[in-house]
Image 1: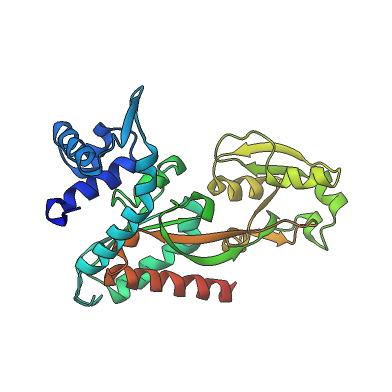
Image 2 (image 1 turned 90 degrees about the vertical axis):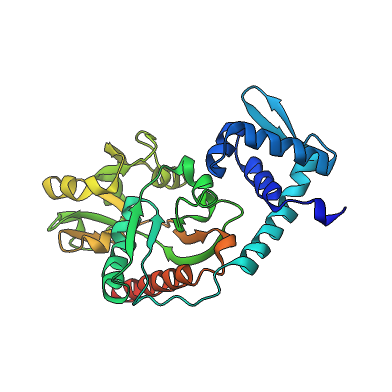
Length: 304
Protein backbone atom coordinates (compact mmCIF):
# COMPACT_ATOMS: atom_id res chain seq x y z
CA UNK A 1 0.00 0.00 0.00
CA UNK A 2 1.24 3.47 -0.92
CA UNK A 3 1.26 5.39 2.40
CA UNK A 4 1.00 8.65 0.47
CA UNK A 5 -2.61 7.67 -0.25
CA UNK A 6 -3.47 7.31 3.42
CA UNK A 7 -5.17 10.25 5.09
CA UNK A 8 -4.79 10.10 8.88
CA UNK A 9 -8.30 11.51 9.22
CA UNK A 10 -9.62 8.37 7.53
CA UNK A 11 -8.05 6.18 10.20
CA UNK A 12 -9.47 8.35 12.96
CA UNK A 13 -12.88 8.10 11.31
CA UNK A 14 -12.60 4.32 11.10
CA UNK A 15 -11.72 4.15 14.79
CA UNK A 16 -14.83 6.18 15.69
CA UNK A 17 -17.08 4.16 13.37
CA UNK A 18 -15.90 0.98 15.09
CA UNK A 19 -17.08 2.42 18.43
CA UNK A 20 -20.31 4.09 17.34
CA UNK A 21 -23.53 2.41 16.13
CA UNK A 22 -23.94 4.52 13.00
CA UNK A 23 -22.77 7.37 10.77
CA UNK A 24 -24.93 9.95 12.56
CA UNK A 25 -23.38 9.21 15.95
CA UNK A 26 -19.87 9.10 14.46
CA UNK A 27 -20.44 12.46 12.80
CA UNK A 28 -21.40 13.93 16.17
CA UNK A 29 -18.20 12.61 17.79
CA UNK A 30 -16.03 13.85 14.91
CA UNK A 31 -17.83 17.19 14.75
CA UNK A 32 -18.51 16.63 11.06
CA UNK A 33 -21.63 16.47 8.90
CA UNK A 34 -23.18 13.11 8.17
CA UNK A 35 -22.39 13.38 4.42
CA UNK A 36 -18.74 14.10 5.25
CA UNK A 37 -18.48 10.94 7.35
CA UNK A 38 -20.27 8.93 4.65
CA UNK A 39 -17.74 10.23 2.09
CA UNK A 40 -14.88 9.14 4.33
CA UNK A 41 -16.45 5.70 4.69
CA UNK A 42 -16.49 5.38 0.88
CA UNK A 43 -12.75 6.17 0.80
CA UNK A 44 -12.08 3.71 3.62
CA UNK A 45 -13.84 0.96 1.69
CA UNK A 46 -11.67 1.71 -1.33
CA UNK A 47 -8.53 1.85 0.80
CA UNK A 48 -9.11 -1.54 2.44
CA UNK A 49 -11.01 -3.13 -0.46
CA UNK A 50 -13.74 -4.24 1.92
CA UNK A 51 -17.26 -3.01 2.81
CA UNK A 52 -16.06 -2.66 6.44
CA UNK A 53 -19.63 -2.10 7.68
CA UNK A 54 -23.05 -3.44 6.69
CA UNK A 55 -26.36 -1.81 7.54
CA UNK A 56 -28.63 -3.71 9.91
CA UNK A 57 -31.66 -1.70 10.87
CA UNK A 58 -30.38 1.67 12.04
CA UNK A 59 -26.94 0.39 13.00
CA UNK A 60 -23.71 -0.27 11.16
CA UNK A 61 -22.25 -3.70 11.90
CA UNK A 62 -18.51 -4.18 11.25
CA UNK A 63 -17.41 -6.90 8.88
CA UNK A 64 -14.84 -9.49 9.86
CA UNK A 65 -12.14 -7.41 8.16
CA UNK A 66 -13.13 -4.32 10.16
CA UNK A 67 -13.02 -6.28 13.43
CA UNK A 68 -9.55 -7.53 12.52
CA UNK A 69 -8.40 -3.96 11.85
CA UNK A 70 -9.60 -2.64 15.22
CA UNK A 71 -6.70 -3.76 17.50
CA UNK A 72 -3.77 -2.69 15.24
CA UNK A 73 -5.59 0.53 14.38
CA UNK A 74 -5.98 1.38 18.03
CA UNK A 75 -2.31 0.64 18.74
CA UNK A 76 -1.30 2.83 15.80
CA UNK A 77 -3.43 5.77 16.99
CA UNK A 78 -2.08 5.42 20.53
CA UNK A 79 1.50 5.60 19.23
CA UNK A 80 0.66 8.56 17.01
CA UNK A 81 -1.03 10.28 19.95
CA UNK A 82 2.10 9.85 22.04
CA UNK A 83 4.30 11.04 19.16
CA UNK A 84 2.23 14.13 18.46
CA UNK A 85 1.17 14.82 22.05
CA UNK A 86 2.21 17.92 23.99
CA UNK A 87 5.93 17.92 24.64
CA UNK A 88 6.04 20.71 27.17
CA UNK A 89 5.89 19.96 30.86
CA UNK A 90 2.82 20.77 32.94
CA UNK A 91 3.27 23.37 35.66
CA UNK A 92 0.23 23.18 37.98
CA UNK A 93 1.06 26.53 39.60
CA UNK A 94 0.55 28.39 36.30
CA UNK A 95 -1.71 26.04 34.33
CA UNK A 96 -5.19 27.10 33.20
CA UNK A 97 -7.31 24.12 32.16
CA UNK A 98 -10.37 22.08 33.09
CA UNK A 99 -10.07 18.51 34.38
CA UNK A 100 -13.13 16.27 34.10
CA UNK A 101 -13.42 13.19 36.31
CA UNK A 102 -16.39 10.80 36.03
CA UNK A 103 -17.56 8.22 38.53
CA UNK A 104 -20.36 7.30 40.90
CA UNK A 105 -21.44 9.97 43.38
CA UNK A 106 -20.28 7.78 46.26
CA UNK A 107 -16.77 7.62 44.79
CA UNK A 108 -16.72 11.39 44.51
CA UNK A 109 -17.73 11.66 48.16
CA UNK A 110 -15.14 9.19 49.40
CA UNK A 111 -12.24 10.04 47.08
CA UNK A 112 -12.36 12.84 44.54
CA UNK A 113 -13.71 15.55 46.83
CA UNK A 114 -10.21 15.48 48.37
CA UNK A 115 -8.94 16.49 44.94
CA UNK A 116 -10.65 19.87 45.29
CA UNK A 117 -8.41 20.82 48.20
CA UNK A 118 -5.31 19.64 46.33
CA UNK A 119 -6.21 21.60 43.21
CA UNK A 120 -6.94 24.82 45.07
CA UNK A 121 -3.57 24.52 46.75
CA UNK A 122 -1.37 23.32 43.89
CA UNK A 123 -3.18 24.33 40.69
CA UNK A 124 -5.24 27.46 41.51
CA UNK A 125 -5.73 28.35 37.85
CA UNK A 126 -7.34 25.01 37.01
CA UNK A 127 -10.95 23.95 37.36
CA UNK A 128 -12.42 20.58 38.24
CA UNK A 129 -15.64 18.98 36.96
CA UNK A 130 -16.84 15.93 38.90
CA UNK A 131 -19.40 14.08 36.78
CA UNK A 132 -21.79 11.20 37.54
CA UNK A 133 -22.83 9.75 34.17
CA UNK A 134 -24.92 6.62 33.84
CA UNK A 135 -22.94 3.43 33.40
CA UNK A 136 -24.37 2.78 29.94
CA UNK A 137 -22.37 5.80 28.71
CA UNK A 138 -19.01 4.67 30.14
CA UNK A 139 -17.87 3.11 26.85
CA UNK A 140 -18.12 6.44 25.05
CA UNK A 141 -16.89 8.94 27.60
CA UNK A 142 -13.14 8.47 27.16
CA UNK A 143 -13.21 7.98 23.42
CA UNK A 144 -15.36 11.06 22.91
CA UNK A 145 -13.09 13.18 25.07
CA UNK A 146 -15.93 14.08 27.43
CA UNK A 147 -13.87 13.11 30.47
CA UNK A 148 -10.19 12.89 31.34
CA UNK A 149 -10.50 10.14 33.94
CA UNK A 150 -13.15 7.51 34.54
CA UNK A 151 -13.34 5.88 37.99
CA UNK A 152 -15.07 2.50 38.03
CA UNK A 153 -14.67 -1.21 38.55
CA UNK A 154 -12.65 -3.07 35.89
CA UNK A 155 -15.78 -4.49 34.27
CA UNK A 156 -17.19 -1.01 33.64
CA UNK A 157 -14.11 0.55 32.05
CA UNK A 158 -13.91 0.48 28.25
CA UNK A 159 -11.80 -2.43 27.04
CA UNK A 160 -9.41 -0.09 25.23
CA UNK A 161 -8.84 2.21 28.21
CA UNK A 162 -5.46 2.54 29.86
CA UNK A 163 -6.00 1.80 33.52
CA UNK A 164 -4.50 1.67 36.98
CA UNK A 165 -5.87 0.20 40.21
CA UNK A 166 -6.48 2.79 42.92
CA UNK A 167 -7.57 0.53 45.78
CA UNK A 168 -9.25 -2.69 46.83
CA UNK A 169 -12.51 -2.05 48.66
CA UNK A 170 -14.24 -4.19 51.28
CA UNK A 171 -17.60 -4.03 53.07
CA UNK A 172 -18.72 -2.92 56.52
CA UNK A 173 -22.10 -2.93 58.25
CA UNK A 174 -23.49 0.37 59.50
CA UNK A 175 -26.33 1.38 61.83
CA UNK A 176 -27.37 4.32 64.00
CA UNK A 177 -25.15 5.31 66.90
CA UNK A 178 -25.88 3.13 69.92
CA UNK A 179 -27.64 0.40 67.97
CA UNK A 180 -27.86 -2.59 70.38
CA UNK A 181 -26.72 -5.10 67.75
CA UNK A 182 -23.46 -3.19 67.31
CA UNK A 183 -22.41 -3.14 70.96
CA UNK A 184 -20.50 -6.40 70.60
CA UNK A 185 -19.42 -8.66 67.77
CA UNK A 186 -22.15 -8.82 65.14
CA UNK A 187 -22.91 -12.53 64.58
CA UNK A 188 -24.72 -14.09 61.64
CA UNK A 189 -27.92 -14.92 63.53
CA UNK A 190 -28.28 -11.35 64.73
CA UNK A 191 -27.41 -9.99 61.28
CA UNK A 192 -30.14 -12.09 59.64
CA UNK A 193 -32.70 -11.10 62.27
CA UNK A 194 -32.26 -7.37 61.59
CA UNK A 195 -34.15 -5.29 59.02
CA UNK A 196 -31.91 -4.03 56.21
CA UNK A 197 -31.53 -1.22 53.69
CA UNK A 198 -30.39 -2.30 50.22
CA UNK A 199 -28.84 0.08 47.70
CA UNK A 200 -29.92 -0.99 44.23
CA UNK A 201 -28.82 1.59 41.61
CA UNK A 202 -30.53 -0.23 38.76
CA UNK A 203 -33.85 -0.82 40.52
CA UNK A 204 -32.79 -4.36 41.37
CA UNK A 205 -35.56 -4.63 43.95
CA UNK A 206 -34.92 -6.28 47.30
CA UNK A 207 -32.29 -8.87 46.40
CA UNK A 208 -28.63 -7.97 46.02
CA UNK A 209 -25.10 -9.31 46.26
CA UNK A 210 -25.27 -9.90 50.03
CA UNK A 211 -28.53 -11.84 49.64
CA UNK A 212 -26.86 -14.10 47.11
CA UNK A 213 -23.99 -14.79 49.52
CA UNK A 214 -26.47 -15.54 52.31
CA UNK A 215 -28.37 -17.93 50.07
CA UNK A 216 -25.19 -19.96 49.60
CA UNK A 217 -25.19 -20.42 53.37
CA UNK A 218 -28.89 -21.30 53.28
CA UNK A 219 -29.62 -18.09 55.17
CA UNK A 220 -31.65 -14.97 54.39
CA UNK A 221 -32.18 -11.45 55.65
CA UNK A 222 -35.18 -9.12 55.42
CA UNK A 223 -34.68 -6.08 53.21
CA UNK A 224 -37.41 -3.58 54.03
CA UNK A 225 -36.11 -0.52 52.17
CA UNK A 226 -34.50 -0.39 48.72
CA UNK A 227 -32.94 2.90 47.56
CA UNK A 228 -31.08 3.93 44.43
CA UNK A 229 -28.21 5.79 46.12
CA UNK A 230 -26.01 5.40 49.18
CA UNK A 231 -26.50 9.12 49.81
CA UNK A 232 -29.94 8.37 51.28
CA UNK A 233 -28.63 5.74 53.69
CA UNK A 234 -27.29 7.85 56.62
CA UNK A 235 -30.58 9.69 57.07
CA UNK A 236 -32.53 6.44 57.06
CA UNK A 237 -30.20 4.69 59.49
CA UNK A 238 -30.11 7.60 61.94
CA UNK A 239 -33.91 7.59 62.23
CA UNK A 240 -34.48 3.81 62.49
CA UNK A 241 -33.02 0.50 63.66
CA UNK A 242 -32.29 -0.56 60.09
CA UNK A 243 -28.79 -1.61 59.09
CA UNK A 244 -26.92 -1.37 55.80
CA UNK A 245 -23.94 -3.23 54.37
CA UNK A 246 -21.85 -0.76 52.39
CA UNK A 247 -18.34 -0.06 51.05
CA UNK A 248 -15.95 0.59 53.93
CA UNK A 249 -14.81 4.01 52.71
CA UNK A 250 -18.37 5.27 52.86
CA UNK A 251 -18.98 3.70 56.25
CA UNK A 252 -15.81 5.33 57.61
CA UNK A 253 -16.79 8.64 56.02
CA UNK A 254 -20.00 8.61 58.05
CA UNK A 255 -18.41 7.11 61.20
CA UNK A 256 -19.21 10.28 63.14
CA UNK A 257 -22.91 9.65 62.54
CA UNK A 258 -23.08 5.84 62.47
CA UNK A 259 -21.75 2.78 64.24
CA UNK A 260 -19.90 0.27 62.08
CA UNK A 261 -19.14 -3.44 62.41
CA UNK A 262 -17.52 -6.21 60.43
CA UNK A 263 -20.03 -8.26 58.43
CA UNK A 264 -20.50 -11.74 59.92
CA UNK A 265 -20.03 -13.52 56.57
CA UNK A 266 -17.32 -13.61 53.98
CA UNK A 267 -17.99 -10.92 51.39
CA UNK A 268 -15.65 -10.43 48.47
CA UNK A 269 -14.58 -6.83 48.02
CA UNK A 270 -14.16 -5.06 44.73
CA UNK A 271 -11.48 -3.16 42.85
CA UNK A 272 -11.62 0.51 41.90
CA UNK A 273 -9.59 1.59 38.91
CA UNK A 274 -9.03 4.84 37.06
CA UNK A 275 -9.14 4.66 33.29
CA UNK A 276 -8.07 7.13 30.63
CA UNK A 277 -7.75 7.35 26.87
CA UNK A 278 -4.39 5.80 25.90
CA UNK A 279 -3.99 8.48 23.25
CA UNK A 280 -3.55 10.96 26.12
CA UNK A 281 -0.70 9.02 27.70
CA UNK A 282 1.75 11.83 26.93
CA UNK A 283 -0.43 14.55 28.51
CA UNK A 284 1.60 15.77 31.47
CA UNK A 285 -1.41 17.49 33.01
CA UNK A 286 -3.33 14.23 33.18
CA UNK A 287 -0.23 12.48 34.51
CA UNK A 288 -0.24 15.03 37.35
CA UNK A 289 -3.95 14.45 37.97
CA UNK A 290 -3.52 10.68 38.11
CA UNK A 291 -0.61 11.01 40.50
CA UNK A 292 -2.64 13.21 42.86
CA UNK A 293 -5.57 10.79 42.85
CA UNK A 294 -3.17 7.94 43.57
CA UNK A 295 -1.73 9.83 46.53
CA UNK A 296 -5.21 10.71 47.81
CA UNK A 297 -6.32 7.07 47.77
CA UNK A 298 -3.19 6.02 49.64
CA UNK A 299 -3.66 8.78 52.24
CA UNK A 300 -7.36 8.11 52.78
CA UNK A 301 -6.69 4.39 53.20
CA UNK A 302 -4.04 5.17 55.83
CA UNK A 303 -6.24 7.62 57.73
CA UNK A 304 -9.13 5.16 57.93
